[in-house]
Image (cartoon, rainbow, N blue to C red; front, side):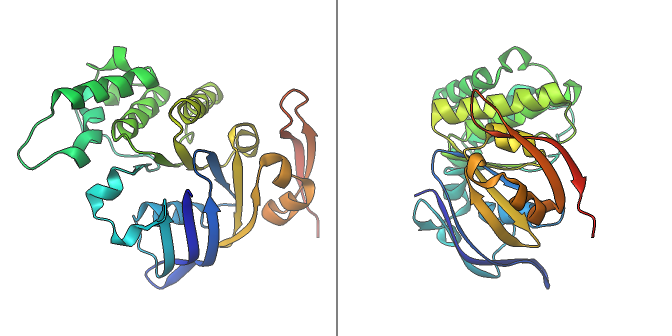
Length: 261
């Protein structure tokens, strides 16, 4: 069992964003949340991360209710990369990645040899080890995103949540980050859940896609099962022209237009 959500209602104060959602996010897969702006994708991710508390319903991580888990215990099982995280001024790459070991630290204790080995491993996995002495604010957007993923990896969790990890990156760096995440999923068996806007990226890289609109789950399944003309009409109110990648079998949106009333 991966992440199970039962009758979730999520809101910001009295403004309900997700009225009632139930779904299962598969373990060891790459799941992507798609849908129009303001549909509740990030709210769902923040609810899973416990950044915002559920108004009603339950969220289970590997069968355990996340509300009953102490913060450090949850941080050992789930890493979260928010949209556009703030970088502390003057911090080096290796110092930022070291924050990933915080859940394992005891009061007044420093990093141990095992911690330093994990930090190095995380930087190697994401290809930023050669940047370890550099200040994070000096890096390019793609490099910086790799450093944040290193921090999340250093937590040594089985679940990684990312809110629009490719936003503000050019096409090459978007692919670089998505290829990296897919590699981590395959090699480390990490369950990855991310919010993404690019439909073709979702089709190409996701094992499981969840389509959301106005706080409701419209559909979920493999790209081949759910990315079709009728679902895209419902989700985005567009008329899409799709074709299939002949080698790998996933759908590609070639063109689209607004549906005329």
